Amino acid sequence: RAAYAKRENGIVSIGADELIKLASIFGYDKEDLGIFFKANVPEKERN
Image 1 (tube, rainbow, N blue to C red):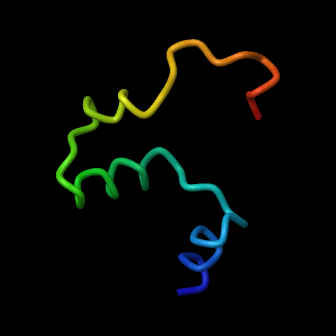
Image 2 (image 1 turned 45 degrees about the horizontal axis):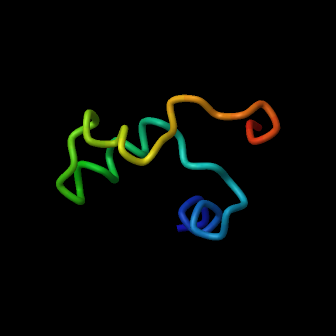
């Protein structure tokens, strides 16, 4: 519960593996996730 709460509150990032699991729960394939990301991200917007 504590780990989930930290992710839910933005304290800990969601990893790629967790993102794939969440996508599958909602009925998306990993190929479908590309619609949520830009191909080119400006340097100032990267972490």
